[in-house]
Image (tube, rainbow, N blue to C red):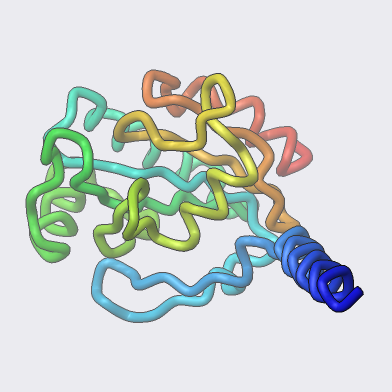
Length: 183
C-alpha cells in the first residue's frame, strides 16, 4: 500500500509541474541584451514580437534589411523585432557581442533590439528558446532550430503564434504582423 501512495505522490508532483509550465509565457524570462544588461521580457508586454536567431556570416544575413524594414514600418504601432545572435550553425556568428552590434549597425543600420549571443539548441539552450520551441515545434514536430534566421511571432499577450523557417523572408510575415496589430 505504501508503494501506491508513493506512486500517487510522484504522479501528482509531475502533473503539478506540467500544469505550472502551461501557465508560463515569454514574460517569465530574463535575457541579456547585446550590451550585457539583464532585460525582463515583461518589458515587451502589449507588443507584437518577432524573435529571430541571427548570424552575421550566413547566406540569410541580408534578412537583417527586411527585419529592420518591418521594425521601422510598425514600431509606432507596438511591434518589435528581437535579434538573438547564435554561433551554432557552421560558426556563422563568431564575433563578440560588441563586434556583432557594430556589424549590425554599420552594415544594416539595425535599430531593433539585439541581445547577447545564445545557444538555441543543445544542453546550453537559452531558456527563452526552450520555451519558444516548446510552444511552436518545428518541421515534423521536431523542436530543434534548423538554421539561422528562424523566426517566432508572438502576440500582444505573449502567446507564441507561429514559427517560420530560415527561408521565410521578413516581407512574407507582413500580413501576419498586421493581423496581430489589428491593421
